Image 1: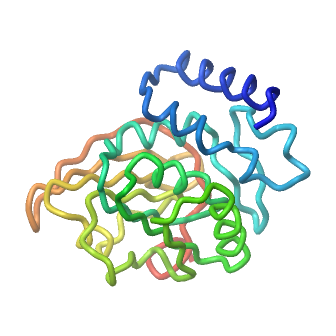
Image 2 (image 1 turned 60 degrees about the horizontal axis):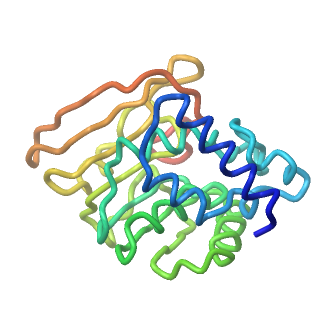
Length: 216
């Protein structure tokens, strides 16, 4: 990695720290999974700016602070089996793969162009335990359920029931819920088959979730 990227990464990490996150494992992942490998070429010069960037099809690679915030509350551990809804650029799921290795990570992307983009980007960082799937993520991924952790990277009207059912007991789910400027990040811990504990984590803005249980 070029020295200028290393400098920019450390500046970004310091900015995220100043915003209240102090998780060295996440910072280690940000250093190991460089964001510039996950953005379109025309945005390379902005790769380590702390804001979202376009990646096509009216979608974005999320703000680095927001990604770090979600991963912090997801409480990832080695050997976790994780489901991500919305692969996007692939950066977030690559960070997850780094944090849980040798655990298994599955990411679903409904848009074929982004499925291809994410798949290509993930190959650049040589993480072998990540599987990107082209499908409707609003229905989850029953084939490999249940999951220790689930994260949604797009906002849904409510947490889709199939996804909740695919979360393990004591598992954690992080997702933005709501529309437009009324979205709120929630953390859900599954107590048993029918009971959940919910914590609200503040307001954010994400693209809307597409698919059967998303926004039409």
